[in-house]
Amino acid sequence: MIEFVSANLAPIMFGVIIFFLLSGFPVAFSLSACGLFFGFIGLELGLIPSALFQALPLRVFGIMQNDTLLAIPFFTLMGLVLERSGMAEDLLETVGQVFGPVRGGLALAVIFVGALLAATTGVVAASVISMGLISLPIMLRYGYSRPIAAGVITASGTLAQAIPPSLVLIVMADQLGRSVGDMYKGAMIPALSLVGLYALFVIGLAIFRPKMVPALPPEALAYREPDGGAGLRSLGVLAILVIAASVALGQNYGAVLTWLEGREVLPPALDETIVVALTFGTIFALVLALINRGLRLGLLSRIAERVTFVLIPPLILIFLVLGTIFLGVATPTEGGAMGAVGAMIMAVARRRLDFKTLVQALESTARLSIFVMFILVGSTIFSFVFTAIDGQVWVEHLFDRLPGGQLGFLLFVNVVIFFLGCFIDFFEIAFILLPLLGPVAENMGIDLIWFGVIIAINLQTSFLTPPFGFALFYLRSVAPNSAYIDRVTKKHIEGMKTGDIYRGSVAFVLIQLVMVGLVIAFPGLVSGGLDKKTEVDLDKIQIQAPPGGAGGWGEESGGAWQ
Image (cartoon, rainbow, N blue to C red; front, top):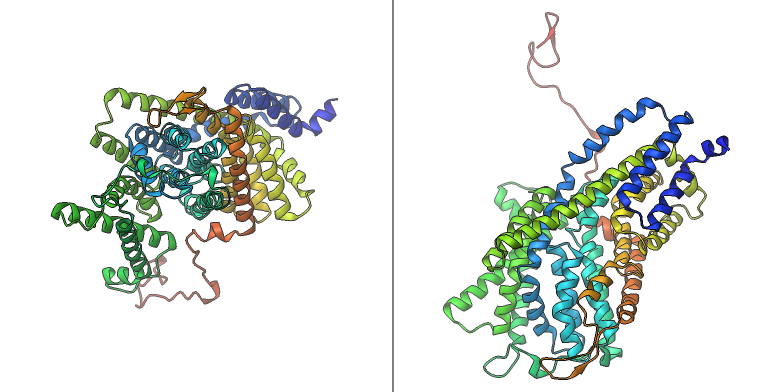
């Protein structure tokens, strides 16, 4: 029996921790207790030297000194403050009026606003609850399919897990030993592609199943021009001008840099060009709107002005956070700090931030940060002991037997993570499995940024998969349980059933899995957003001795190097 335990301690330890996690025991304490218990067994069996455990306190203190993890409380605080600033309400109301006149317009507005909220708040709960409170009653009022309405809201809320500044990407970068900035850059194109797939799905419904996503009636449009029109032509012209200005700067950004520097500079990276071009386009639109309002020129319609002034604050916040990170001006931790300060300034300007609200946001931030810290300490103890008993060797041998090489490994890992995501929180999966899978992936020649983005998109499905999809619970908490009389149309509207919410998530889970497959099939979706590595030919490097005779570098004089 002792020989069997000694030979199979690693798989036994892994099986025990999976049992505790699926049983519902607190994750942090399960990890710590399991690590210490099997560490004691390893000591007794002579598999672990007693001196090895002296390094464990240093590992725990190293977690507390990790500057990268400071980005988690900063981004969490930013999201919680923005949730109370009224930004989501303004965005949904305005963008809903823009897209409302077309079939599926409300759903497209929710997707677009969900992407904007994801790029500012980074918190799934805030996005789903805000959009559920504001958009769901309007969708039900005007005849949207209940599963489609629920699916669009929950799926758009989960974009906060894929679009930077996602907390998942911070954890991924930390556990895989890669830069958070690189993880953000690598995830940007797949995340935006996922937004596009959501939009294509809604457009397909509008074409083939128009009754499921009806357009808003004319009386539901709040912004009407004096001539009775919707003012969308003016908004279209403004959008074309802004896009043209952004594209023009993006194509000539290298030349602009050369002119500013007074010398020829290397071509700027793609992410830097995009950030600068979008920032310039935002400033251009703001200046046009201010001139139009200040001089009362009447060039822009009411809805065009409204869209400009509503979109400017979140876009400025996005630049403060992601723009400074992509340009290399700030680290992710510093970008998170600027984002938190910017969110508080925005909330104060809207008169939506008082002392009580700030205290609540700080308490929630501290609670989540402590939750993450305890799980990370527990996972560190677990992985420390697991590595000490050669658990990583067992994991590598486990995957060596899989057919298909890299592709087989990626498919198997994603199937396992998808299944575990139905029952376990994404933090737990990231902290437990990534330290085990990361070295295996690296040994197989898999780029860890690519690997991390794949896993992050897969983990996004954990918020939509029954029975423990958190986004489904968030919407259930704000959706009407029973029938009610609509305050606008005075019609009798049935409540939202839990089955409707679950059915609505199926199509979007499939879309997310398609996106996982696309990222696996086309690694350029990730690498295209990264800075190009400079290739150095060592055979062509020449080192020239400095001019000068005696006393120059490399000449020996009097027994000493001058």
